[in-house]
Length: 130
Ligand SMILES: [Zn+2]
Image (cartoon, rainbow, N blue to C red):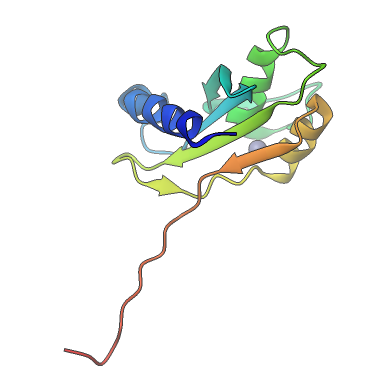
């Protein structure tokens, strides 16, 4: 996966941020990438997942689930594909978006072998110095 596609995904997520359905909650984005091209993408959204999914009783549609749903029929399943996960705060700061165990299992079943996900950045402070 080349860096440009990650930049493209970051740009899409940032542009979409004000329109995210979750105004105060976590804002997750999942992008489906094949041969360095964006196949489709989705966000998490409110709702209760029931019946026939591994997410029974989750108070949220995870972005991975939504993206996989959209990617069905768009992917060439003869070729490998990757997932890029991005989570942002309201102001566009990156946060940890490592897929939850249920999404990891879903993505694996779907044939995905590689997930690139955003992480929080760390700041360093020295105490006792002026
Ligand atoms: Zn999940």
